[in-house]
Image 1 (cartoon, rainbow, N blue to C red):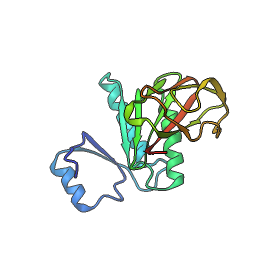
Image 2 (spheres, one colour):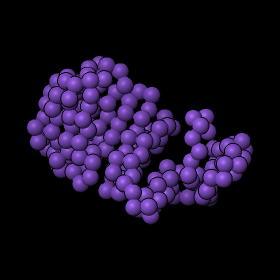
Image 3 (cartoon, rainbow, N blue to C red):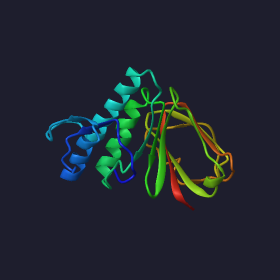
Image 4 (cartoon, helix red, strand yellow):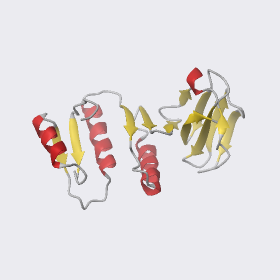
Length: 185
């Protein structure tokens, strides 16, 4: 609402939406899908499922940018990463954009590479494998990796530094979370 964007669909349990937001959704004639507060899925999971359904229904590739996805809680952050990793086959591209970082999930099956730009030079970049025996290649980094096999949640890819204007991370096998910190190292 504050950004001036009217959503196509609003879904969730609406437990944190105030009466002003609910009235605005109704006034904008936004299709609302309400769920009970007692449920096994998070509101984000429900929203992603709705987005995947709409993309499939319209035969369109799905590209998403998520913000404020974790609520500042580690359990939510891990849940979001797990959810996105599971849905990566259905998603063409997903970005998580927060104040202090941008993250993407790369998968050998779908969205395989992230090419960085001149604005990223000097920033810290970390890769966290989300599957056993994930294979990645990093170029244009302080420490390049060539077809390196990494175990699940390995710390070997933590705190690298983007060195060139055309640095790239490529996932050859498995899935990997790539995190680019907003500030230079």
